[in-house]
Structure formats: structure tokens, C-alpha cells
Image (cartoon, rainbow, N blue to C red):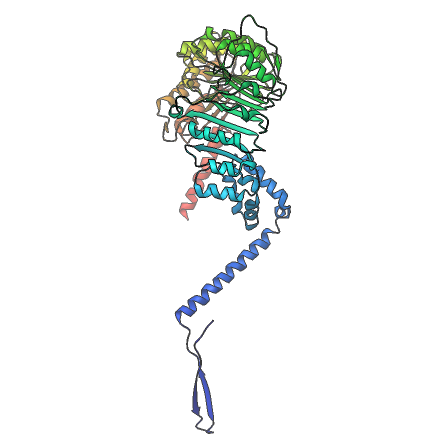
Length: 576
């Protein structure tokens, strides 16, 4: 700390006459004081950081080797699906050591999907010499230079965007060295109309001459030399002609291509041609196939399934086009019947119906069957996606599907269907003799379901006249929080009324419902409120088991006791 120089002053003592020399020290300025305080603050912060680091070093996880900690961070990034969006880097904010580990995790920085230029360039720098996995959307030549510059490090290349820009990259793939490129995905759907009239829209043959060790190939809207494809583990072709003919691949050409890829794990094909009637085709064995998706005509899909041999655990997704009614899926029903019976006819199944949407709901359960999407599974999964124009057509398709699969469906999930009518429900339920559990959202479909179940009970009160549901799960998750917030809403009122009528008639028929679960994750008020509680209290005497509300047993006596305790507590707090 700097102070002003001392100034000397002399004075004589009046008693002895001696001279005394006194030093006067000038007071520090405000700036000097502020600077001294700032320096001390910095010192204390440094001391705190050192103490934190010392304390963190005592944690058990800090004793792990850096290599193992990097592995832990990598597992977190993969399991949380945070590789490309870089959300994994938040672990670097835990402590200084983890920050250094995150910066040194070169392989994680190699997952590149550019959002901002400065982040993109930082990733290239921080990836070091690790392999690069690009997911790019390009409409010009912005990334061509980086792709060429890092060609020897690129392991995966996933390109979408303008067709002309992607074809420019394809030319570089042929002329440069890509020694570790094992995964290539090219979607050339956009801006194809801007290509010159004489432009050859095809992937060149030299790309498959063996110089590039491709194992995963996904192509869309371009031609490809099918005869040169071999050794692949993943193959997806969407609207891809055979470049040797300029036409959609023939049935025999597809089988020849698949026989050259016996190690296939995932196969996705559309635009399937019908087989020639006068020709015999060999069966292709794909012993490692885990996922199969086929889109095309009903007949060609059925024919291809007859000529493929794959494991019984393979997940199968079938999307026949042009399906209007049940008669349009007659060819495909035979392989569906065969595939769903490979594990026997007694294994418990689940049925998922997603009507009025293109989305297929994939079950996370081990034994599950998803119509407009219908799914039927055991340890594997079979999905049939159709697009019928009417409710009657949908009902026909569903009826034929249910008759083709084993009659061992125990779980029915229609949470992603909002347009099933009462007629559809009265058709579905009798075709499911083993049905035990129904999952449904609080919507008009739920009202139709409850009315249909009540009608069936009233029509046939005998214990074994039709399947008796043991567990009914009503969820209120689909709607936004601002919608249907009170029980005054007509849908909620209708659902509660339908529940009361159904539970009462079940009790009157001597087969009371065992479990009713009500779930409300959208804060819409379906599982709470006075009107709901009053309705549940009216249902409780007719139940053969429990009512669960948000996974808690509904017990009016316990609820009243807790409310009394809370009221007494509030009263005591107020009196203080």
C-alpha cells in the first residue's frame, strides 16, 4: 500500500531544552483505500477457490482416475441424448476439475450440428484429433471446405438441405480420402427443381468401390447403384431408383442387394415392387436384423416378408399405402398372423391404437402390441400404420388385425386416439377376450368408451359373456394446463358420470372393478377438486378394490383427518 512521504518537524522541550523530531504521516487517499480493499477481496476469493478445490478433492468421486471420469461424462451425454445439442457441457460447471475434464473430452466435441458459427468453430478446435460426426443442413458451399479439410477424421456425415449443395459434397466424397467414414446419410428432397434439366440425380458408382468403409447408409430422393451395395449393417432407402436403370428397384434386385448385406441390423425400404409371377425367388436370411420398416403396396410388402428370414425379436413396422378399408390389407394379414404367433398364442400382449395421427406410439414395455397405427408385440414389436379415410374403414382394418393376432391381448392403450366412437368400442372390446387393463385419456373417446362398456354390461350381465376389465387408468395429460381446468367442463363431467354408471353396473352384475387409477399431470383439476372427490366417494362403495389418485390410495377418512390436522395447525398459527 502506498502512502505519501513523511514530513519532519522539530520542537524544543520547554523543561529540558532538548529538540524532538516528529514525523507526520499523511492520510491515504480514497483511491488508495479502494485499491487496497479490491486487492484484499481478490485475495480472499482466491483463498475461497483454493478451499473449495481442496474440499472437492476429498469427495469420493474426485478420487476416480481422469479416464474413468471422462467415461462417466460420456455415458451421461449418451444416455441424456445430449451429444449434438451440447447439453452435456453443463457438467463442466460443477467444479474446476470437471470443467477441465469436459474441455479435454475431445471425442464428445466431435458431435457437430452447427447452430452458431462461433460454437461450430470452437467444436472443431476442441475435438482435437478425435473422429468427427457431422449433422449438417446446407444450402450452399459453406461446409464443403471444412468437410474436405477434415476428411480423414469424419466418421459420420448426415446431410440435409438443397440438393445441389449436397451433390457438391458427394463429388468431394469421390475425389478425396475418407478412410473412416462409416455412416452416410443424404436427404436430397429439397430444391431438386433447381437442378439443371440434364443433371444426373444419382450417387456415383465410385462411392461404393470399397475405398470408403461404409457400414450405415441412408439415402432419400436419389438414385443408387443397388448392385454395388454390400457389407452394410444399416440401410434406409426412400424414393430411391436403381441408377443402372433409372427405375424403381425390382423385387429380385432388392433381394439380391439384401443377400449382399447379411449383417443388416436395421432395414428401411419403401417403393417396393411386386414380384414377377413366373419367377421363383430365393429366401434371404438376415440373422442379425433388429428393425424392419417396409412401406409400399399391400401385396409387395407381403411378398417381401415371405422371402425374408429374420429373428423372432425383430421389430417390424409395416406401412401399406392406399389402404381404405379392411379388404385392402388382406394380403398382409397372412404374414402378420405368422409373425405374431412365433412366440405362441398364450403370451400376454398389449394393443396400442393411435388413430387420427401419423405418429406411431412405441411402447417402452417388454410385452406390448401400435393402428391408423396398430401395434402388436411380444418380446418384439409389430406395427401396422394405415390411413383410412373414415371411421368405418378404420373399424374394418382394426377388426381384421385383431382377428389375425393372438387373442391374448391383456392391455389396451388408446391414450393417443381421440376419435374412437361408441360403435368402435363395442366392436373392439368383444374381440379382446383376455383384456384386463385399459389406458385412456380424459376426452370424448373416454366418454364413448365408458358408454360402450356400460352398454355391454347392460346387454350381457353374465360373468363370462365378454372380457371383464380389472384395471381402468384415466389420465389427464394430453391437454394444456389452461384447458378444462374445472370439473364444470362438459368432457370432465361426462367422464365422471360415465365412470359412476360403469362402476355401479359392474357391481350390480357381480364383477366389480378391481382398480381405478386417476392421473392428472397437467394441473387441469381432473384428479382434484370437491366435485371430483364427491364423485369418487360415490364410486368407492361399488369398487372391488382401490381407487388411486395420482398413485395415492383414495381414502376419504384419511383425507378428512389430514385436513382437520391442517386446519388446526393454521388456527394455532393464527392465534399466535
